[in-house]
Image (tube, rainbow, N blue to C red; front, side, top):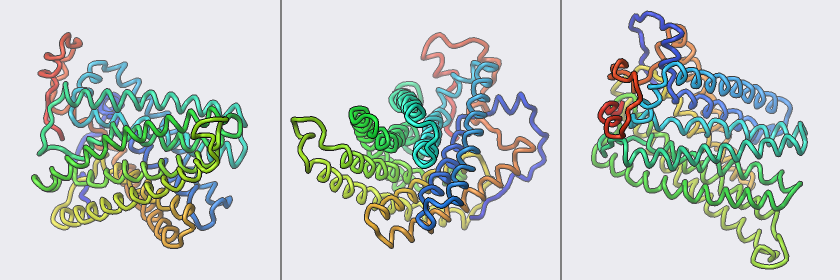
Amino acid sequence: MPMGSDDGVRSPKSGKDIVRNFAPAWFAVNMGTGAISLLFYAFPYGNGSQGLNVFALIFFFLNLVLFATFVLVQCVRYAMFPDIWWIMLYHPVQSLYLGCMPMGATTLLNIAVNLINEDYGFGGKAFLYALWGLWWLDVAISALCCFGMVHFMKTRQRHSLEKMTSVWLLPVVTFIVASSSGGVIALPLAKYSSLHALITITTSICLVTIGVSLAFMMLTVYLLRLIVHGLPPGATIVSVFLPLGPMGQAGYSVLLIGQVLDSILPYGNFGILAVGTTGHVIHVICLCISMMLWALTTMWVVYAFLAMHDVLRRNRYPFKLPFWGLIFPNGVYANLTLALARALDSRFFRVYGAIYSIFTLILWIFVSCRTIMLLRGGQIFEAPCLEDVDMTRFNTRPTTSESKVSTVRVEPS
């Protein structure tokens, strides 16, 4: 993948400058690193072996340290520069990356439940219920991102079809990712309480329904934008992979929902949930829906690679932080493929999923190396929402929505 580099001579940024320019997009690093951890855990060849589990744990703890660091730096950023919060929030692109934070957290929860609690038995019931509580917190933050940011997009930001990218999907994907994590937690939770598992999986059904519905609406508009205005310009071409995220993760979530309901049903003494075959029927239906979503994700994979080939064979672009957006969508697509391989006992899905997982790992290594190379000079610490704004105009918080909009209105970058 030919990429340019920032070879221009720049003076290193100070620690204060780094904090000031530490954008929410950094949480995409957590999403990508967490996806690699999940792929090591789900890899079909040698699955459950000590070697793969060790690699999954290495990426898990690396991700945990990064997540804690990013949260701390974000807190310091808005404490030192409180006006940046409003500048970022009203920016039509950078604000959408707020959804990366709860999505990065779910990758930590999934490994903590599956590998640390279930496989290694760490913490037992108390630890599992602590993770369940953190999942509810993640659901609440996802709701703020989904409902709040879509509302802001409609009422406080300026958007146009020509400048649209698939970054629009980031706020709504939070619901889909949270629903898949609910499916991961619900199954071990059923050992202690079928009611708690049923509440969790019902919430996951609501989350994935809302998330997928909004994602389909936005993807329809996005396809129109591509047909009418062509591919995204410049380095934003990497956003063509983002549609893999909602489709792939939704397929994984629906598959988990079917498996959990098949496990905990029948439940109660009356109603449809008490019928013995209900769980099996739902499981089959969910498997079919998951297959359909995998097919749609594969369609977007083809379009994404065609778009990247068309653009990158003619141009070279400097490496920037949004390139981390390549990892998570490809990772969830590989993870869905491996989940279908287990559900169907399919050799095709097993081999294809393993190959795609290796491809995603190579992509993570490439992006990580490029990021580390740019850390020393601080060139990678950029906050586009601050580039065209004179910070002296934001000494006080705007008192009306109109003044905020007029003050921070900038073009998407």
